[in-house]
Length: 131
Image 1: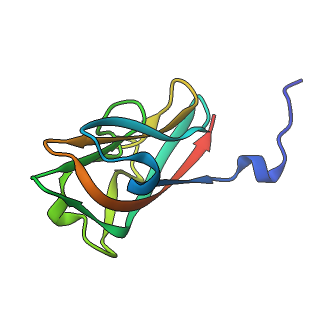
Image 2 (image 1 turned 30 degrees about the horizontal axis):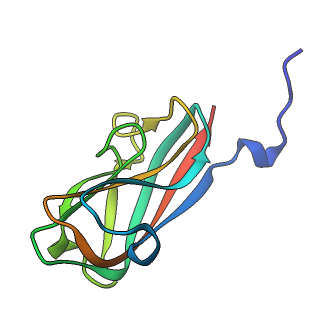
Image 3 (image 1 turned 45 degrees about the horizontal axis):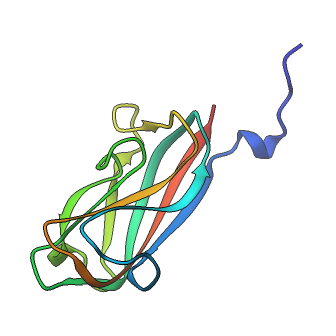
């Protein structure tokens, strides 16, 4: 017989990731936050990005978010869109076509492009099912 799951295990789960310039730095490149928070074979179906502290840079910085690829959660987004209290939709928007399936346990990769950041704090909530 197959293994039975409790009702809670069948429910959608939510992972919370926080990128904070004060802790994670702001150099151009990628940094992983919340390592292994989303398990292998999870199906990320939707999410929300909230800017807690405005993203600042001396140049035209962009920020992208990803699990399996650099931009499968949020495409490279200009700092001008990452102002205090901004709320952004993620790429997964509750459809099969936009869902992201993890191949291994993952943290959220935050990729800074074009110019280094000098400030910023971003909270990301991702809703997912485990397979």
